[in-house]
Image (tube, rainbow, N blue to C red; front, side):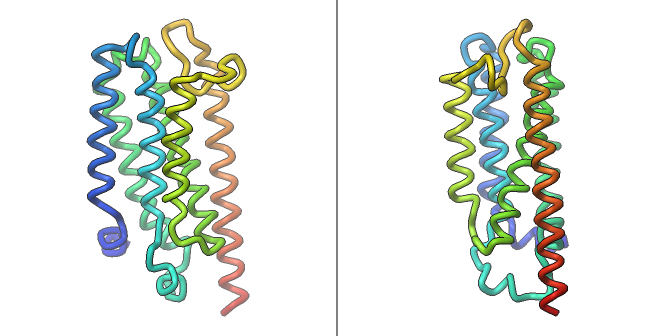
Length: 200
């Protein structure tokens, strides 16, 4: 698995994304009241970086090899866990920025990575070789929109703000995101394994 991950992961992209995430959250720590939208944008960037791990430009060849989708997902998933660990470290480092809700910000990143992983794995199982190219753009663009425009913020509470923000509602939204991610990932891998068994 380690050899597969070393060869398959776009390490330069991952390195740049992790560095930019740290910069964004450090800026939020310095000016939390004026730069708060960067926190949501950092979540979107984290999810996009995780999605990029699962792209397979050589899918026409790789999909015919004995290493099945679940195995490849697990190999790359180790790096996704590394991204989550990095997120947790950076959030802890910049904890004063989050109005006493560093745990909630940490949860946002973890749930976003899980959902992104589930989505791109589902698309890979359907034969799309590089789903993260579109998904990553959508994740970052969507995070920018939600963090800056804050549409229907009384209903869709993803990135609450200040001590009195609706953090409990945000936790529920992110719990729903994570739950859907777990279900989609489990069903996708189970169905891919079933198809592989029938084909063999």
